[in-house]
Image 1: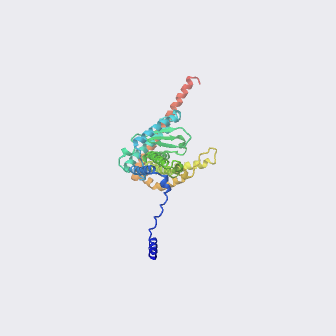
Image 2: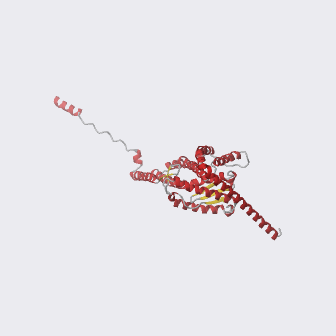
Image 3: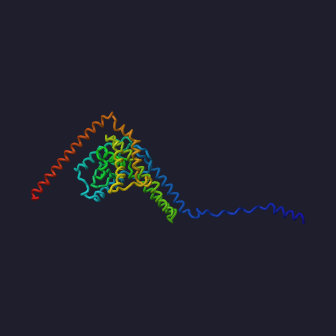
Length: 357
């Protein structure tokens, strides 16, 4: 009996322990079934591949960015918007082509456009300007308005609102503004914005697929605005300031005028606080589409040595001759303007005599 007892004890002592219990399934795995996870991973991989496929470099600044649009596509959008704006402003608010302001804007813009072409030949990383810029000539439209503004559309359409002349009071200062606007087209900022919008829309739809409750999407939208769209917009403005002052210098306009223009705009906003005519104050820079005036003025100080070297190239002989030609063109424009005014007054008097006024 004792032997049998020992045998029973040994069997009990060396019994194999039971396997450990299985852990409960992960909540993330249970919440995201394979038919959602696999498409999400596939779409994410496709997005990353597409991003690197369309990675592009801005001329001169060499900034890397996503650019998935073609010149033809951007130009088509710009042309359509141009026609809409002409109708929106109306003929009565668009200055005629022979108006002194229109002539001045066109004369300065043409010089800067030629400089922009030289700039692209020198700094285009692909060395193929037909693929990276529109070959259409620029159009210049001057709008009668109290608003101080200028802007450009893809397809080389420049708009200037006459309120800008309160701050840009000579050709050098107007050239600084036009150089900035044309620089937006050189850098193809409109195409970059369109490309980024497509990517952000894609990511938003991906979040809706992952989280149909829209909780992630509702956090995504303001985050994109604050952390991507606004910083990118400010970056575009800084880039246009930098490229613009260089092409204006190459066109023999004094680059120091850029700082005067933006300094005048800053002073105008500050002075408006003490007058009856209120101008909208700038929001904090991180909430603005544009850099603060202080930031822009500081940037011009940093870029000015290079811009002045361009302005004084060839010992200053090139720009000395061109600026003499500019002065002659201004005198001719002034005489033509005076002649038109005289003819208009004569026609007016003739009409008054004819109708017995």
